[in-house]
Length: 276
Image 1 (cartoon, one colour):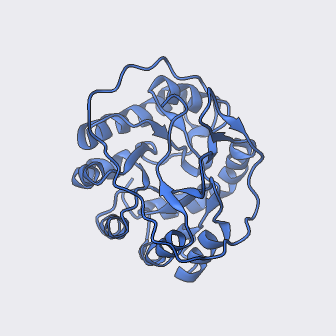
Image 2 (tube, rainbow, N blue to C red):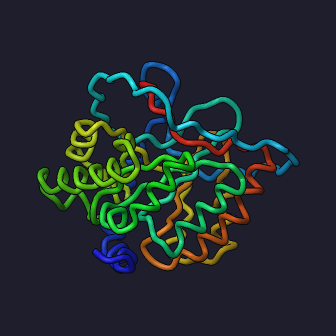
């Protein structure tokens, strides 16, 4: 699938995927600091946070050090993580479908300006063409997750096809980023049993989202900014895109809402696995 075909395919599959995605995330779980996930109800509209001046900025993330100890096999989840538990006003920014050399570098530049780290769920086709951007993500402390090779609707594939989509992408990420992905996101939010089982088999936890910016519909920069700021609350995971179509609005919106979130005291960070 070529770069700008994501948008056309997304519109064609959206109607069927919406119900599947809702079913997959309706009872999603939150990332906790204990022995397992904490169950939470699906998030509804959030009250907009009162913006207060703050000099807080996230300290640079150290992504290097001694090799990690081997972990026990991951449990097979029945629902994706939807939120994250944490101290204070902690949020995650996530970007799907990239990397795209037209937009991803601008997003990385803005994140670097404010010393904030995000999570990029990359598609293998895109990553294979743009390995230098994965290397930059690693150098700058961002997390890279698996978003399949070609962004298919997983519920229409065989088990073998799903594994191929995941495995090929994980291999490219490991080669370009420097380590295997620890997180997986199903395209369109359409999860099924095979996706959970195969993701765990490949060492990945499933992560969904709480706040959908709907930026793929190109609703306008201000609309994207309002969705993020109105949905801001402790523990939420924001979904945006850095590829799959014209993402210039997403680039401009990040420049507006990121300093607003930081000035209101939010801690923008990356996900922590329950076994970490």
